[in-house]
Image (tube, rainbow, N blue to C red; front, top):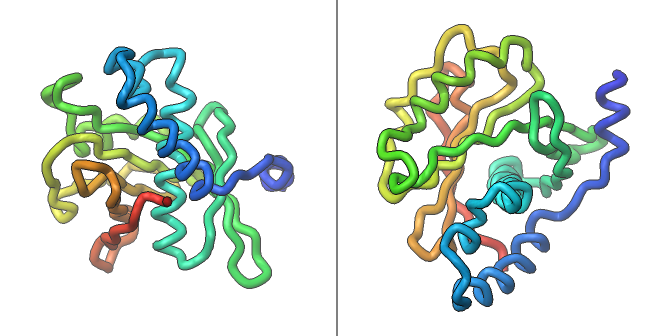
Length: 192
């Protein structure tokens, strides 16, 4: 109950408007002469901005999945990077989310979704925390090939990533912890 009161007091933002504003800035930055590491938010100083963008992209996908608007509050805690919230009927839902990433091949040739999932076993008692893995590689993956360890103690497991080279179309797959049903896969546009 204490945690819910804390989560309810956070300041939540609209991921669609955040991403639409960011897209205008991305176009300007991409045409500039700054380094690729800065353009792709791959410096330590820009990690919070990269995580905010990823959180917003995940929340837009979850909005499409749930059929309601999902907002987010970037707040780094011991077991999560942001909190998502949405309302269904008269109930306000809160979900702490830990972001992970399958980095591009030029950063790690061996990075894979399965490798990232294998490293989640240290979340021993995070039953209310969902993990959102950004698939940040060119290519495809087969959601049916994902193997979830039996000892994984998290609230949900999702994968999201760009489906088009220009990143105008994204996809969300999950929840990989749900048994007895096929893994959901939906596509959604980057907000304008």
